[in-house]
Image (cartoon, rainbow, N blue to C red; front, side, top):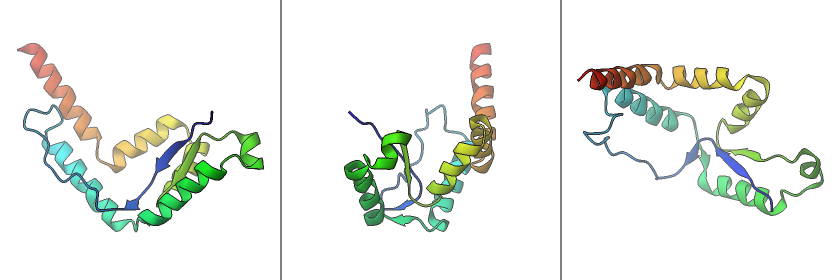
Length: 126
């Protein structure tokens, strides 16, 4: 059996969750709303790959992934979609913790983590 982990970059589809977070969600805070809005705008600006091209590449990996080179590299992660090749390179040359920290900054998640932490501390005190 062969397992592939498909890491998806930007793909142009009409699938988007545009709903607001539930009022009782622990993630419902202004910082998270800002982060989600920023992510949605970025997805529109980054010229995503067409869904057809993405599907063709993924199916090609599934059907022909047992090539001579893959037999020796045994790669598990395959990257498709806009920016996915850059992410693949970044993950191979940069410590994982640094990449995750950069994502926290890029997607403005530090404020989200702080807000959630503060909310948890407040609920412990009451």
